[in-house]
Image 1 (cartoon, each protein chain N blue to C red):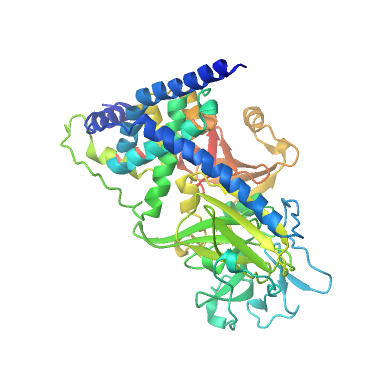
Image 2: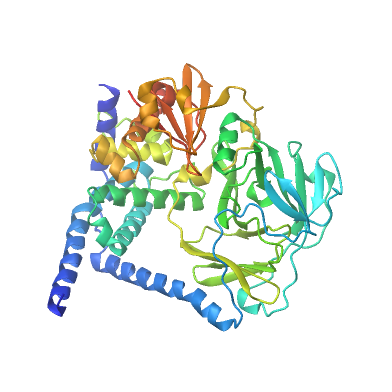
Length: 163
Length: 373
């Protein structure tokens, strides 16, 4: 490869990351805020996951579900950080917004946030990020059957929370 | 509105009210990514420098299964949940439960000042009241941070824990624990004696009340004089192992670590890392204790080991695709039976034809399941 070819390849590497970044940052950020209820932490987590995506962009860019990968890394990082802060049992919403009770069931939202991270990730991926079962499996790095079973367990917990 | 519609509506409704924030500049993200890559390269060069500095430095290939530490024939060892622990004498110093004194590694005769402070066990005396009633045998290693420190075995509390022990190649069925690994005599989240980190918590009403993060290395050879941990590029201290155990308490989990064992004259005898720690799924690192009071239960008789031919249906047999070396357990739960597949030391996989059955089973934290319907 000539020096020019190397430069072009490097440029396209950077551009493809920037495109992905601008398309996906807010999508992942919103999903995390919904899941963990902490805007500042969600922001830090998405930044951290994007740094890791950039570090490994040659690999991540070839993934079928890059957004899902970033969501998974961000969610894991946020969960770990929550634990370090000893706030796991008390997730804090930094921005309280009045929500239409016809649309948002506060008990359900609270129950989603109380799910274990593994279960919550599947619920957020399926219902908010609108991923298929196999796309969710790819994003979270688990078999399709595990997506089914985690979702099934999560729904049992959510149903119980509403009853 | 169905539950599905309700969930979708609630999540989308919440997402739509998330206040807009400007994303961090991509240039900043790229700058951090480039810096991280550079730091990782530097971290890999550190061990090389250390080897060059020590004229006689020898790196012993990493042993993937060091449950039995290398000891000379004249050193006494006792089995603690399948881990051979070097002791001062084969006779216990007290009984009920049996307690031995751990054998201290040789004192270093080389300059350890580059490795940080000496965090070694100090000498003390075991006391009858130190151990939980459930402990069946223990080795006293000394005092750490003013507290008596033991490595001990206790019976696995349930069929799930027993399977968990099998995952770690521990066929005695006992769980292995060390004093720092839990707040109330809990078990250890170790990986076959390899250096690693554990995080134990205790909580009341769902609120974490105490938290212990420990770097531990078990099964060290008796000629190891110093174990030093380097976190994110800096040595944080060293310790002379006792009974082949080194245990350091940390303030938080590091992002990157290197563990190095030296003999008494400063020759490197084993190293592990540097390892970059990815965030661990929360359930796996947060709920490591299986010996907390509320979870303690007599060994269940509801499980048994089975052979692949005993798998009840073709569909399940096909899904499981048992391989040589796999172990299978049939476990009864309310409403049916589950099959647990243990493959190597991977997290067990729980199979069932019914998603409802798996959903209703109280699986150990961090375990995954696969259902077929």
